[in-house]
Length: 351
Image (tube, rainbow, N blue to C red; front, side, top):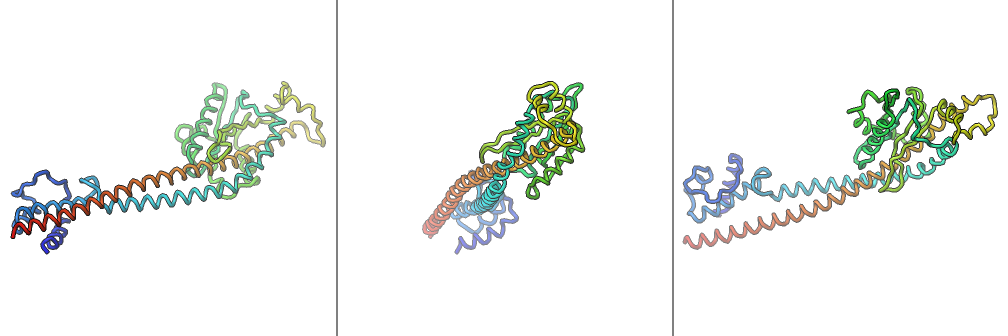
C-alpha cells in the first residue's frame, strides 16, 4: 500500500522535477524536493529504497542521454527501423520490376548504333576545337554511385579537351548531375534536361531530345557519357563519340577508317554533305536512345543493390535493438523484484 501511494505521488511530482543522474551518496539533509517529500513520512531504510525507485522512474521517463535508455525509447526506435525496412524492401521490388521492363529494350537497342560504329568507327581521342559533353544521369537518388561516376568522367573529358583555342560545353540530362555540375561548372552548361524517365522511354521521345541538343549547341564532336549495363551489380562508365558532318568529311579525306566512305555509291539526288548530315543526326539519336536505356538499367540495378544492403543493415540494427530492449526490460524487472523484496524485508525489520 505504501509503495502504491509512493508511486502515485512520485509520478505526480515528476513533471515539476528535472531528470538528472543519480548521486552516488545522496544526503538525507539535502534540499531536494524529493527528500522533503519522502523523509517526514518513512523510516530511513525504506527512504533509500523509495528514493532509488523514484530516480529510476525519472531516468526512464527523462530525455535521452541522461543516464540510461528506457524500454519505450527502444520500442519507438525498433518501430522506426521496421518501417524503414519495409520501405527499402518495397523499393527493391519496384526497382526489380522496372529493371525487367527496361533490360530487354536496352539489349535490343544495341543493334541500332552498332552498324554506325562499324561504318564510322568510334574515335573518342579525336582532337577538335568544339566539344560537347552529354552527361546522362538519373532524376532520383538512392542508386549508389552511378551519378557521381558519370560526373567524374565528364569532368575528366572537360580537362582533356579544354585549351586556349578550344571550347568545351556540357549538356546535362538528369536532375542529379545537374545539381552537382551547377556548383562549379554553371557557365559551361549549354542545356539541361530533367524528368526524361517520367514517362516510358521510346525512340520518338529520345529523338526529340537529340534534335533539341543539335539545334542548341555547336559542336565538332559530341561525347556521350553514360553507364553501360552489364548486370545488377556491375555497370561500366562509357563514352560514345559522334562527329559532326564536317569532321566526318575531313577525316574521310585524310583516310583511315572513314576513308572507306568514298567506296560507297550514292543513289538519288542528295549530295555527300547532305547524306553525312542525315547520317550524323540519325547516329546521334540512335546512340542517345541506347545510352538512355542503358543508363536506366544501371540506375535500377544500382537501386536494387542499395535497397538490398539497406534492408540487411536495418535487419542487423533491429537485432541489436531487440537485444538492447530485452536487456533493458530484464534489468527493469530485476530492479522491481529487488525493490519489492527489500521493501518487505524492511517492513518486517521495522515491526
